[in-house]
Length: 272
Ligand code: SF4
Image (tube, rainbow, N blue to C red):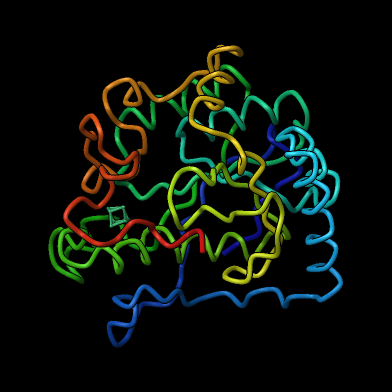
């Protein structure tokens, strides 16, 4: 895997197909990522992030301050993970205003809704960005040939491991920090998400500038700044992933009830 250029939004472009090793013994089915070696956690860096997080906690962020601190601390080796959901669209706008030299990447599972691609194109046009496209080792047809059809309907953890976690791990091995759009309110597993932290799973610094935002905050920002967003959000899809694993939610259902419906699974494994 070559090292991508990440000098900024305007130059982070192209695509990478990640060449992680083929699972020999079905280990991918466990969801355990394998591949590039993580950066070792440095005690001083963890302590620095924890201290800075306390500062942000006292101030309640704000999101823009978290973003700018992260950009100044880690660029050019820091990038925004964008799935073209509402929060990520807000962050793309925020980056363009406050830290335009931070790169943007997305995990193209090749099972995204057409609306996600259309949202990407609208963001590219509006902000003159060229997000880096990260592809899994196998396209869906090759995955079906190796592991059987519709793996997501039988072993969604294995499918997420191959199409999301391993590609992300391979890309993050080239970075020192990443930025996400997760919010504490989204799910119990995200309830304690800090603003900045050492990410032990992937071995680099991580920022969650919108940690303290509510869904209403995200909508307010997007509307106030006329940010392009995925039209599926207006059709009962508060959380949008791959098309085989995402359905609209009914009134009264949890916002993430439409993800992996029928399975106990609530996260793809990118955020722990
Ligand atoms: S969300 Fe579904 S289709 Fe997408 S990678 Fe995970 S299991 Fe596969």
